[in-house]
Amino acid sequence: MAHFLVPAARMWDDVVHTCAHQRLFCSEDCVGDWLAATGSARGYVMDLGTLWRLAAHWYDGRLERGYVRREPSQAAAVFPREIAPPIRRFAEQSDTVVHWTEFDRGGHFAAMEVPDLLTGDVREFFRPLRLRQGSSGGRPG
Image (cartoon, rainbow, N blue to C red; front, top):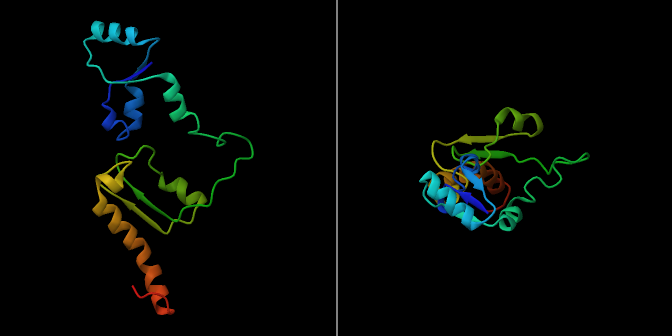
């Protein structure tokens, strides 16, 4: 059993924090014994099979010889509570980064958490493309 001290609704806000605050137990009884001994509140409990299904393919192929990156992304919207925020200098070593925005709020589910910021940034990124398309007979921006 995996016991997460972070409430399930907040687990993806900061996965590093969530993983640092989990404990593995042999059974539900062991979880209960630990909670009683430590005075900790019961968090989210997940069986190891479920945990494995969620995590098993996280790094699929990325550590194997011959791994080939997917096509590079051209833009990045970086939110402070993202699970694995991109590091600009690494992104620029392998990609042609044409648009990079760092926000002061939001996380892994930015579309839900800060839709106004994400929507504005997506529009800003595509605006030059729309204007270019409009000048060549496409839909006007």
